[in-house]
Length: 580
Image (cartoon, rainbow, N blue to C red; front, side, top):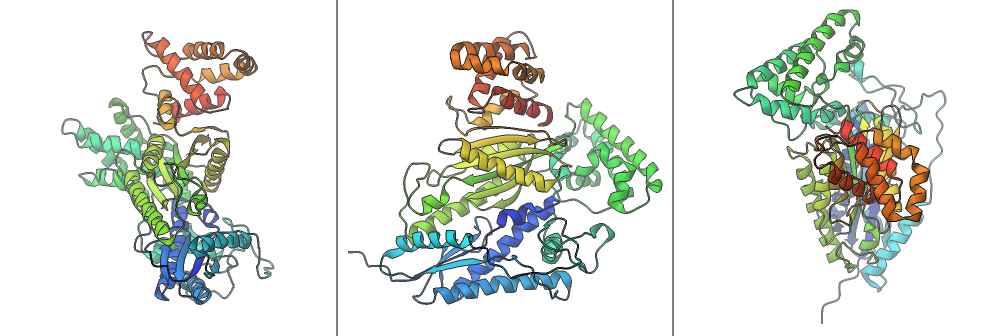
């Protein structure tokens, strides 16, 4: 007979508001800092519980930030759980005060209400076992989230933070700011903005660097060719010279880019991302970024445009598409993870989980390995992704437009069948779009996808144009033809043998009512009419066009489940135009 587990208190500590903390951002560096701040606070909570004598269940360890969730689960000796949790919450607040000291030198006297937010529950073992404790703890956490307790605050005559309007901006900003670093921010967002400096970590690639990464990778690979490399290297070096004249801070290299074999190519790999866009070479843009006078930058801007035009001409001659203005946010979330851990849901293999510490620790290990694998996959040279947060059950990353769907596919395929299925949203957005709005939209798209597809396991693909125009296509990850939905979107690529004309969208919009009526009356006629419309707008050689029309029409029917085909077609046309 197996020995009965000793009675212990179950302690769960949660740090809510993670998505808000990450999404309140103006730059990719803000996004990364928000993620790392939360991770550092969770690490402190886990470390405190462990140091007091608690046994960690989730996460199983705290050595690697990958796979670290925003809550900690631990077992404590009977009667000690509440004091352990109180000590851990105190350690989190002490860590936050230490960060404020590092930023403001000395510490500010005013509070930062709601940051950090630490919620905890403790459930003693009354003899009904760990499964009962877990269910009780989840119910208590749910009830706790409904309580909005806060100390009254009064901020007369204070400006509002431009990133988080619920907080006042600091009257006295941190010391030693450069002119371009001046901002109207709350204390919490100053910690985010100064995170890289106080931690000494690496820079984070900008939206421009991520969007232009495939273009730069192709040129860097050609530059290594002995036969044609000299011309390309000379164009890179000329652009480097003009950018060096402007000055300004450097960029972080997108993981996966070749490093280059000479100073010009090395700069192009690391910092050349923003400089391959003509808009960057406008005098007003340069003046804004450097703080210099517009008049003194006119000649510099002209020289830069000349150097860039030379580089783009060389790229065109070697069949390299010009850089797109778009990149993508990839968000992924395991479906029903809470129900699965509670023994109510199933994994991808349709198996329920035994609710005990050993199984929870095993699942935590699976999530950690998944997170590490996803980080490695995203940073491959063929994907050029930039992970922000990889928690195993939750993922946020940036990717170039041309590789975003492949990056989503790679992350999806790494999920073990011992875990629940995952839903994913891929949102394409302009590099000059408001990052906060794009992050919010990506999360909304993921939530809508989970609600729209029966059984979840959904893929949402959408775009947000600079003008504000948006569209999306939502479908199950797996198609009835055995292909993944991400792979099916390849029929809309610009390099396929029979590219799709944007004029198809106008026809589908014009015939929406007729197509809907035909769909209700006769499925075969509906498919035939859709195939006919598609065939009218396919390019390429006449040979094979009929077969291509049949395949594209079938894809339109398969994708965007339950939606009108015009929406999916708009997404497909967008991919053809911008995912290059």
